[in-house]
Image (tube, rainbow, N blue to C red; front, side):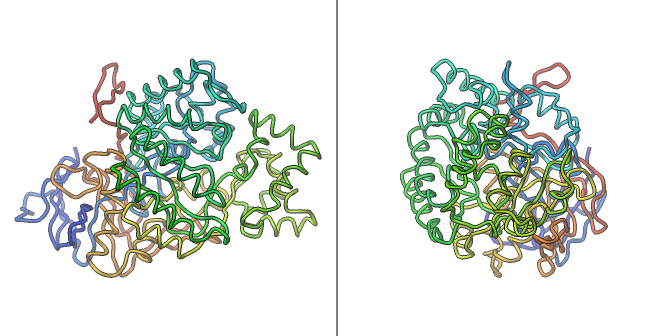
Length: 547
């Protein structure tokens, strides 16, 4: 049982959008007991003096890729040090469950290599319940919930080839999806740039969306394109929302490439039309002008047909390389805007490791090679395990999305330990500084602007995911709390020095236990697995319902 404590005299921004107020927060048994009024401090085990500090709910990061890093590095240092207390994994279709009977697990693990930073980590599960059991056993510092990844779902039933599922296969996929919801998944995520999801038809997406809607879960979309075809890609997600009625989240909404700047405004217009017609649609974004992804997402879909082994064979064919180079000829951003951020930790040439943190253009210049050939060499060597940081975005577009009432803030990052296996390479700084960066640079200076900004990081994303009792400082809510100094709050992580913790975070509590204080991480790991409504999970041989 957590201690009884009072967070006293802080400026409470409760995550509901209500104006900030100086108040005490009483916490008992891991829950908020009372906010404001006459809080009796005398009976508390501990009183935290929050004078001069802002007191908010812990940040609810609904778009993360910490599926496996929370098992390798459960202290979740890069996230909890910036105030994140709840992570939703399984995004962009790149989840690690379900693993259908007969599925090629090794091929699926290769395909989601973006998540797989620790080769020594064993995959000990075959379904969502088993995965959540593994997370629970790891005892992470943060609360964790999951979405169901479209990639393992489709690959386990259809494989990696460019074809649609037949009716029996589609029924099986829908059944497996429903099983994941029963085990606690909050919804379905897709990522239509990744093989084999790039072969998914709208009929398949609509059928899965109907299952999502029936179970009142959320459907999150890494849409087909964020560059020249952003608008038709967003329109596809909205058509599925309209056809099925499912809750819909459009992930990391941005326009890539100078010629596409401004397109996000038209995408948001389409979102507004859907909202005005009564459909439940939202978007998320992180406060940076660069993204982070597998290099393989830049490949044309035909090159990825058949999975990693087929791609490696194709890349040995000169004619295929010429065709890929031709497909890249009119790319909206150049190789000088794309930086190598990580190569897999096994069997990598020393030269490739040394070039992490360098643009593809600069690597090519050093080698006296063509940048297209350098990119294809990296793909041939590492497949989906080679990661990049990519630019080509507009500050005006970013502010347009961040200012929109349908937007919430989400990192698209990972929980990392800079001193452990997950800390290798040159990761995107969003994994260390997303929320302090947003609140210090983009939130605005007034108290009402602060209240709206905090809601975008707490109550609003929790509501979108159906995480009841999370994201607000209200009676009965989880006592996940952040104390920060508004004047000192700042992200320190940069693209050249990304593994730096932010300034101004004074204390972070998860379930009423202090995980971060002024000395850093306390080593406590009180996070819980959060399951969707009306789901069951196995605990000690019994069945438990989570609501």
